Each structure stands twice: as structure tokens, then as C-alpha cells.
Amino acid sequence: YKGGTFYIGAEDGNFKLIGFDSYSADKERNYFYNLVNTYVNPNLDIKSTLIPYTVNDKDLFILKITIGESIIKPVALQYKSGATFYMRRDGFTNNATIDEIKNMVLSCSSIQFDMIDSNKIYDKSKFTKLFQFYKEKTSSTLTDKILASIGFFNVDHRLKNGACLFLDDCSSSKTQLFCSIFSGINKGSERTITLQKYKGNLIDLIGYAKEFVESRMNRSFIKLPDRRIDIEAFPHRALFEGIINAIAHRDYYLDGTQIQIDMFQDRLEITSPGSFYLSNFNGTVYDLSKLISKRRNELICNILVRCKV
Image (cartoon, rainbow, N blue to C red; front, side, top):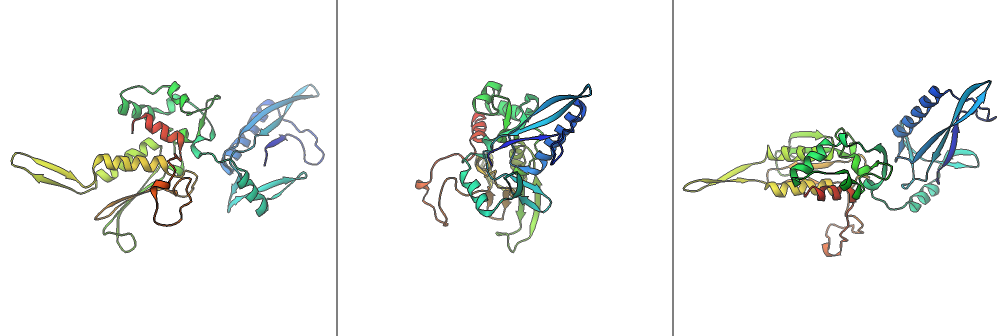
């Protein structure tokens, strides 16, 4: 709940030190980090140190693991059938009660998903697509100084969650894009002609979405005496802005969701997961003048603004 410290390398019950040699200690530490990254959500602030001691002139180590208080609560163990929440009480670990889970949620600070620290370290060579995109849109070079100024990484060069979605090799389920073409004017009773799924970094996602629509939309033309004017069903600028808005303002906390692009005979629909941000509207009619102008994803929006899109 508030973070804490524990040790790896001692027997349960009698606290007898087992210890590891230096090679085994590093191996055990890597194994621990892999387990946490695989089964614990959200990411934790973990620091580990090796505590040395000597037995019969042999150097051994135990692992000290210190975990900071999580900004987002509750923290779940995701294993097999689903997510489970635990509490540590009086030296024992048990399932958290409903009231304890509610209290954790209520005590959680409201923080945007993209501004949370990840466990990944900034490496410029892993963002070639972002740097190229910036160059194409601004005719200038994206620098580390610019990225630092918008909070792309922290003082320890750990990337923010939003920055990780721009990694060249990003394959997060949070970047899923489903594109469909329907034969008629609705989903329920019409045949699906095409269904394609994409997943990758946010720069690639913009390209996938544009290419899908532009290569399949209807076109016509107006014939003039000396030339013709081509007319496209969806203007490039309007399409591009719709895609950018969907990526910039979707709710990245919502797992198991995706940006949806649906093409019908008479229209194009772009759906981005999430409700109005910081609003209490529950109906189907909205007074837009009463909605707070607030970015849901500060870092992602800042990057796209810097790229002039």
C-alpha cells in the first residue's frame, strides 16, 4: 500500500541466510524483475541493492528490494484467470477486501497515464521514426533538449509511459487500431467487407490509418472545359486531423480497447476509447461550452504539437 522493503536470500521462518554468489545474485535479480514486469500492473518504482557478507572466506550476497509507493492504486497481480489484489497485514499477506480496494482507489493521485515513469531508459537510436516524422513536419531536428523540456524522460533518463508508445519496436496492446469496411450504412445488419488490425508505435499508427482510408475511399471529379477537379470522399486534412485527435486523446488506461476506423457507404467513423475527460456528463446531449478544455495525455499531445500536427 505504501511501498516497503524485503530481502531475497533468507529462509522463511528462521531467517537463516542462504545467500548467492555474485553471478547467481545477478541472475536472481534479473529473474525477479522479469516476473514483476510480466505479472504486476502498473509498473513499480523498484530499487535493488546487493548486501555482501562472508561465510568461510566465501563472499556471498543477499538481495535488498525497495519498492516505492505506487502513484496508481491498486496494484494488481495479473496471473492465469485474472487480476488479484493483496494486502500485507501483521507479517502475513492476504487478499485485499472490497473496502481496502476502494480506499486504495480513493487515495490514488489523479495522474495521466502518459506522464508515469516507465522502467525503460531513453536511447535516441530507438526513436528513428519519431525523429524522421518530426523532420518531415517541421524541417528541423528534434533534440534531446526539446524532449527533456516536455518531460519525455525524467532526470534518471527513464522514459515516461507516453514516450514508450513512440519506440520504434513498440508493440503495446494500447496502440491497437481496428479498421473495417461495411457494405451498407450500419454495422448490425451489413456484411463486413474488410477487417484489418494494426499495432505498433504511434507514428506508424498514423500512417496505417491514413493509408487504409485513402486507398479505399470513393473518388469522383468535376469536368471543366480545360481540366478536371478531383474530389475525394474525405479531405486529406480532415482525415489526418481526425486520426491525430483519436491518438492524442484516447484513454490509454483502458485495456482491451482500440481506436476504431469504420467505413460505410455514406460516411467514415473514427472512434477513440474514453469518455469526455474531467466531465460528469452521462447523457447523449452535451453542452460543449461547459466542458473543461484539458488534455487527457499531456506528453503525447506535446509531442504532436511539437511535430506541428
